[in-house]
Image 1: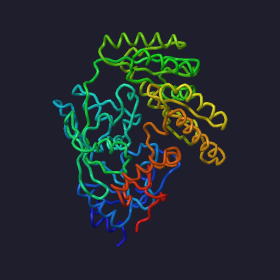
Image 2: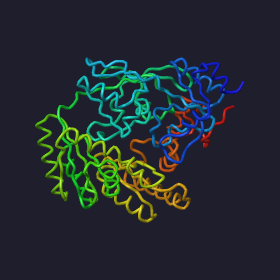
Image 3: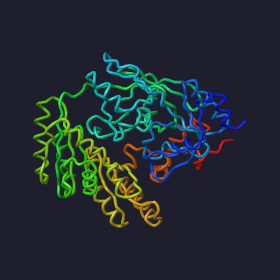
Image 4: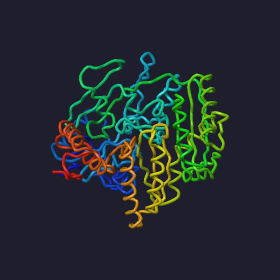
Length: 466
């Protein structure tokens, strides 16, 4: 009996789909250039289905790749050869909003923006807001420890995950964490699982922490004719002990593309701009907005602009979230990376990216979360030109090396997946890699769960079924 027939017998024919056109849909995620056809696509009905699937994977030697909405940018959901893709379209319920404990139980397929709307309707706030929040799922966010525009003030996904229920690679059901504000019973398994990129467990239920919704906010733009001046303004704002909810950077290329795409009135001739949102008590917001405006002008902003209405503020933030889509219109191949450095190193890192782009004669737009040092150098190229792609590869290597040399890291929010695995292995201390391998080996001795991603148990990146 072949593998797909066995899966149909064990899980139900309606839960296993190996039609070529369906397999092709799940051969890739939002990462360019990387794709592999899965053996089949599985839609589990319940926890027991997932347990049976993983037991079969260990018995027969195929891989299982959990997938959210496929918006990831490190090839974390690209199936290895000899793998099936595990989908959760039916696992999309917000099960409980507990206002007494400021928590919400969700299934992994809940869309992030839908969760925002549901909790905000009751006066609560779930801060993580990845750029793909209108499509991405909570399960994917937790697997990748997703960030977003509000990361500076509110942190990232890991700061809001209280508990996880799921299935281990060997088929056992587990729960980590609880609704308790304090819970130190045993190892902190929840923090281990957040950001594990689908390699340590399949998530089936997630408990998230909520906070009160800020009563007021204000959005403003500051426009600069020198990128270094924008970096100096960021440093000056934070030195004044002002912590904006959003503090975003765009370079000249990105500004021009976003304005052409979204038409929100961005100054296309500017070298750099900062998009800043302040929130909190109305009086505090007004006072801090005045101070931020003065700080930006003192740092060299040619002009500043405040959003006059809530819809204008939302349009400006939406335009920033559209930076990737806007840049993608310039060239056939778009590679959106994320390199993170300590905030004090931000101006130097921006300058380094510009120099690398100039030296390798490639086009790179830069935008990102200036307040937390997380930049998104976005390479615009054409994969049909082998020589250009060789230059792109060398440039990306140098960008990651420059980030690490400045005390930074190769990824702040996109994850390692398959795309950045070579950089992790080259730029991490051997003891660190062995630490991760031992954790993975203990939980997934046969490496059936998202095989080949992040750090493998062996040099082999592709798994053939036995």
